[in-house]
Length: 628
Ligand code: M6R
Image 1 (cartoon, rainbow, N blue to C red):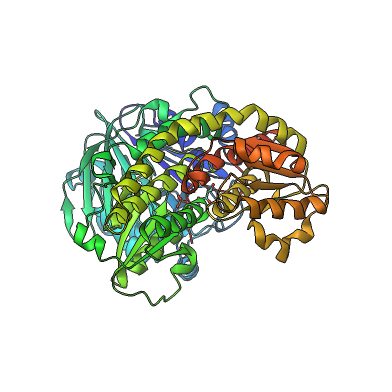
Image 2: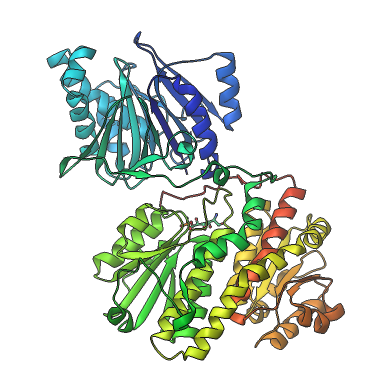
């Protein structure tokens, strides 16, 4: 959701800015813009509502150049997606330009004050307040000092930092932001609070970005900024200043991302590539974590002793969207394997609840991006209440991963498609391993543990086999692509799989879809059933197979088309009851949501494709939702 890039160095910044914005497109946006500075005191901007190609077209027609600049992709929050509301926003009378991710909650009162002081607003955004606010401090400071660019360098850009800091102190809300100054074209000042920012360190150049993907291929040296930090970035220097701790050495780490991980690798869409990566991503999530000799799993980063883990009496799993569905899978699996009561809560609700949780409660924030605002806020609230909070996240160094007491990284590689696929299956596997680990500390026998390890080790190849349904699913998608409503139904472990299948379909094909526990369907949603409303049953063989078949009969009796996702044995029983059958390999019941996710992901993908939807960048959605 919104993206920032920046550059200071010896090259023309616009090339990097556009290439970086292209890499950030996956985050979701509806307009974009760049600003470039030259030493002749020119600060030029270009902005365009719509796709990045529109901005690139404008720049081809009216190029701008400079060796310092910043760029932005905006996902509208305050004011619609228009050229005027696109970032960068200008402060004062062309003194400086700002790009910003996050939300300034007190922008109205600040705007009133700035307007009263004569500042003219040209957009409906909250960001423009930041630009004018910094300008107002600069105008006070500059009137007193009239510094030249050379004097500013001598003073280490301190006067500019003072103005930015003074403005930040007035803001309430969240920001990742970057400021450039018309009269000081060799510096970018960046600041972070609640919205990610990283700096790439090059040779005589520095890069700025709101996540690491724009840096891939340009540098492998990365600095993750923390909340309340300000970075003063020139071509040759990087200073990191903390609000309370003063200047601190920049913690330069190695970025372990290869170019192949952020491109489509020959697939038509990132989503399809990520669906097909799952046999490998599941291996990566499990790598080094299964201990066959002790018939258990282990995790390096939980930062809790076995004694502390044995005293856990309750687990809360929280997250949003697909991560919340993975949490539901986790609830079934952990309760089954470890016999610990598990509660699953939407992060957006948990943050405002006041749940009476006892000592011995362990809270897991589950999140692909590690930046989801609601999940971060829920985790902070649980921490504030004194509970141990752990993260299950895919993004190393993300805010949630950093603020948690410890956690589990998914190691699924960057997920670029807005619709989460490989992160979901890796989350389910991480939670299953957690169930095994906690179960083996309690009642699970070595024999039971060893069987679960065998099941887990066989899983990647079973997922590979499930991917063979690709062509069959494509044909089923063609058949039903014009339907207006879908039901997704499953029970027990496959109830969350049904919810996730429905979410995938609605996200990328814009078809109304509802996921339900199969038996619950007759308490309302069955009223939706007619010959144009397909029901996708997630019904592999298992404890509730017969029950779900009865639910299938109920749909059939009302003329609704049935698509069954099942295993070979199940297919034989279902016979003609289903109009279409998609077969997946037989796996242990607690692993079924992982294998059945494959056809539902592919079904959503091919239906969306058939309807001409932008699969990787669905309308209105952002990859990581960093606003409440
Ligand atoms: O990055 P997170 O896992 O915290 O994101 C949570 C949701 O925003 C996310 O899962 C969303 O529902 C996806 N677009 C689902 O495909």
